[in-house]
Image (cartoon, rainbow over all chains, first blue to last red):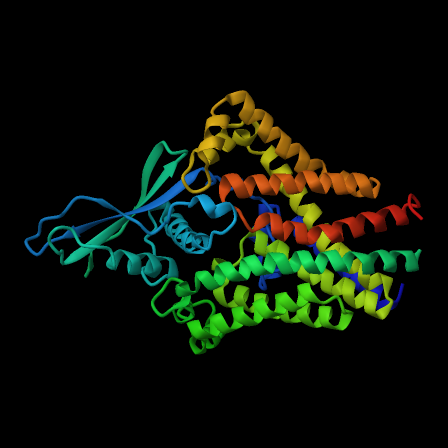
Length: 165
Length: 277
């Protein structure tokens, strides 16, 4: 084996060892600097506690006379078509909104207020603002992030203030 | 032994490049179809991502790139994948893989966590490892070729082991409830999967089949090539099932792209242990 080959083999083995170490939260949590470039993949699929959760956004409007309308669903996450096992480009839009909803909900754990200039918040707010109005147009709109676990348990994980339309 | 390993490495490249090309066609075509996400004021508009406080340097680059630039890069990726699939000449193979790693890497960097899912990660790892192996074969350096097999085959093996092992520590996975919950959801579920996993015993059998197949996969690296190929066939069937039941349609292609490297790694292990000639 050449010197180059030996070094490359050793580096590949070292990368495997560090990847294995980073699967454990104490290490990945305390040494994030080692993964600045995002080169250490996490392989824990569907074990983070949200594999059975469906995300949804609901909106309601406040009208000029001060009345507040009913909550209604906002269709940002497209249902999976039958052809999805072959061709599913809609998965990218769905993933963006699911990630934004999940990120925003996590940031409000423990009563912490989510930053309204974060990418997750502005992504959701942009979709909220373009939602079709109720029968009569409102002057402001608020949204709520709804989690439905295993198609049964429903919880509202975040409610925004009213934003002007 | 070195020459025998290099010959195996050279032989594995033919299959690897075609499988990588097939995965890239699907992945790139899906991103092109979803290209409107990058338009101004859309969720993945890089100008929007440019406002992130913690990524100022990336922000400067993002501000200069438009949706048109994204589509152009994806077009380059598509053409490179076509060339990769069409030709087996080593210099072309190396150039295509290097270019593809550059374009994919750029997307991952510029789009942040919104770009890469598990299949993209494995696909990129397959490309990186195959590139190293190809350079090793071209240079007659068995060490480089082995490094490539470790990069791809090693990471895929680790992926399966960690996926299986992490499920073992979650009570709702062990008792089948997690699988039943996933199949009941709108996002990942399927009516047939939901009906089947409502039967508790079926849910438990399916769950433990997946856990054991994933967890025990590393042992297959020590088995003769025929057995290793059979083990990979079982895992591919699992990925096809997740594509059918959960819409994870790119996973079978991305993971299959890494399988030639797994076979090569298995060969290297058995040669090293004196089990193969």
